Image (cartoon, rainbow, N blue to C red; front, top):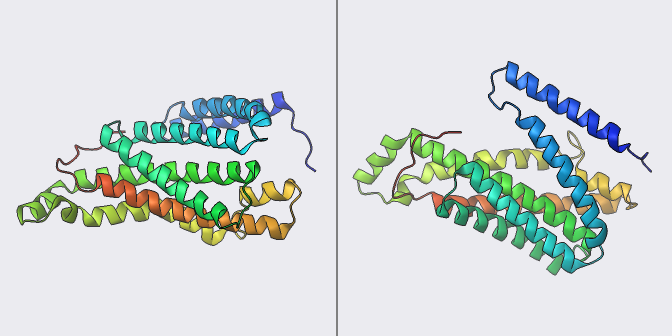
Length: 250
């Protein structure tokens, strides 16, 4: 059993760490300004609301599904805004997040590997949605940056008779690799370099280390499947442009 955390002290310490991070990045000329502070403030507010909401929702699979729908919507809108808002981007991100997360949840629960309970559904669903958002953002941004940076190469292939999809093939692959490498590294080093949250959370909740490890394995496999589906969908929608993107801007 872990000791209870003091609310005020925890908020103050987290704010101090965010301020230090912002000052360090500002000093280094990274250009994020006060985003770390804004980010931790939003996270604190959202987690406090989440704690209150989940105390009620965690009792029902239906309520958890509703909450996952809210999470997926926010994830899609956040990634779309970060990439560059457009109908095409929204379609790509929404397709990647929903298909990737949906396939993972369907396999895990329909197979009976994981019991369809509110706690498991929330944990697995939340993790897959979050990772899908990250994969979609990195994939799309890198793909568009590559197409802009190598505009003349793509135009050369088009002039030789290649289709837009053929001319952008290597950039789609490179963007997908870049987006998936952190997740692959996470999977390969779990237990050695990182102590994953699903494992520790299950242990703290009273599960045996073996059961916690098996659940974490399902989570890791789900992260890989979700990421693979998400990046393929995103590059499939955005990776055959009829009009090449302009120079990327933050």
